Amino acid sequence: MVIISGKKKSERKIGFVEKVGHKIPDPVIIFIFLYILVLLITLIFGGNVFSMSASDGGSVEYTIKNMFTAENIRWIFSNAILNNWLGYAGGIVGTILIVMFGIGIAEESGLLSVLIRRLGTNISDKFLPFILVFLGIMSNIATDAGYLILIPLAGLLYAGIGKNPLIGMAAAFAGVSAGFSANLIPATVVDVIVGTNAEAFAQSQNIPFVSYLGKEINPFTMHYYFMVASTVLLVLIGGFVTLKFVKPRFERQEYIIPSDINMNDFEVTKHEKKALRWALIGLALSLAAAVILGFGPLSAYVDDSGKTVTPFLDNIILIITMVFFVPGLFYGYSSGKFKNTGDVVSAMSKQIGGMGYVIVLTFFCYNFLSLLTYTNIGVYITYIGAKGLQAIGASNMPILLIIGFIVITGVINLFVGGLSSKWMLLGPIFVPMLYRVNSSMTPDVVAAAYRIADSSTNIITPLMTYAGVVLMYMRKYKPDFSAGNLIGVMAPYSAVFIVSWTVMLMIFIWLRIPLGF
Image (cartoon, rainbow, N blue to C red; front, side, top):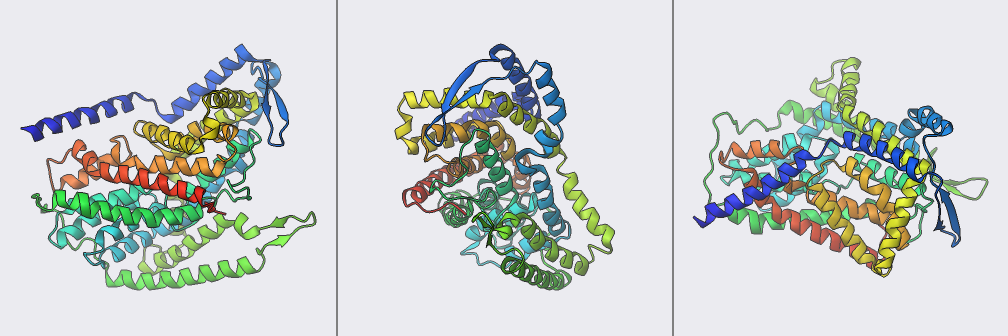
C-alpha cells in the first residue's frame, strides 16, 4: 500500500511538470513575442542614456534607440534576411547546414546504424553498462540514431543474455540524452551552435572572446578538452549508477519478450561487414587528406601584421564534414544503399529537410537577438543584472555564479526543451552579464556551465522530445511502466551527472586547465 501511494505522489509531480510545460508556447512564438516586447520598450525608453565599464578600464556610453523612427524601421526591413538572420554570428545557419551534409551521408547510408550494432553486439557482460553509456554519448553525432537504434538495441542485448532489458535501455538513454554535450569528436553540431553563438553574444557587448586563461579560442573547439574529459567521466559514473542503482532495482523484476521482437533484428550481416571494410578505407583516405591539408595548404602561418593565422582550425567544420562524408559514401555504395549520385544528393537533402524547424526558429531568434543588440536593450539588461549581482557581493563568488547558473538552466530545462532555443534565450543575457560581474566568467566558462545543466536534466523531464519514444520501447518489456517510473529510474543518473560534472568544471578552473583551444 505504501508503494502504491508513493507512486501516485510521483505521478502527481510528473503531471505538474507536464501541465506547466504544455502551457509554455513554442520557442518560435516566444521569440516573436519578445521581438514585439523589445519594440514597445524602445518606444518607452528610447533616448535614455547609460554608461558601462569597458574592457580597457574606461567607460562606454550607450543610448537606447527608439525603433519607431523612420530610420530604424528601415533598418528592420533592410537587415531582416541577410544581416540579421543569414549573416548572424558569421553565418552560423549555413555552418550548421554544412555539418549536416556529412552527417546526412553517414547516417542515410546506414553506416552509423551498423557501427552501433557492430559495437553493441560484441561487448562483454561485465563492461556492457559502460559501453552502452559510451555509445550513447558518441551516437549524438548522428542526430536521432541513439534514440531510435541504440536504446532498443540495448534492450535486445540484455534480453539476449537473460537480464532485464530495462537495465540496458536506462544506461543507453543516460548516455544518449544526459551525455548530450559530451563527445570525443570536435566541432559537432552542439559545438557549432553553442560556440558560435557564445562568440556572437560576447561581441554584441564588446566582451572579449577569450578563454578564462586569457587565450584566444576557436568557437568550434573551445570546449574540446573538457568534452573529452566529460566523456570519460560520464561513462565511468554512468556505468557505476547502472550497476549500483538501476541493476539491483530491475534484476529481480519480471519482464516479457514480445512476440514481435526478433533477437536477430540487430545482427550485422556479412554484406554489411564487407561494406564496413570499405568505409574503413574511406575513413583512412579522408584522414590522410586532412593530415595533408593540415601540414600543407592549411598549415598555420604568420601574416604581414604579425598575427598567427590557423586555416586548418578556422575550417575545422569542413574538415569534419569531409571525414564523415567519405566513409559514408564508400559504405553507401558498397552496401547498395546508394546506387547512383542521385541517391547521394537525396541523402543530403533528407537531412537538410529535417532542419526545417531550425530554419524557422533561427529566423525569428536571430532577428530578435540582432534587435536586442541594435537597440542597446541587451546591454541595458546586462547593466541592470550586473549591478544587482554586484550589490549582493556576487563579484567575489565566481563558484556560486557558476552553480547558480547551472541550477537556473537545469530547472528551465524541465519545462523548455531544445538546447539551441534555451541558449538563445539565456546566452545573450548571461554571457555578458556574468562577465561584467566577475571577469573570470568568460564566455567559454558560462557556455560550459550551460552545457552541463542542459544535458543532465534531459532524462528527467517528460517534455523531452524522445521521452515518449523511450517509454514506448520500455513498455514492450514491461507494459505497466509509466512516465513516473521512467523518471524515477533516470533520476540517479541526472543527480550524479550534474553534481560530478559541475565538480569537474570547478577542478578544471581551479587547476587552470584549458577547456579547449
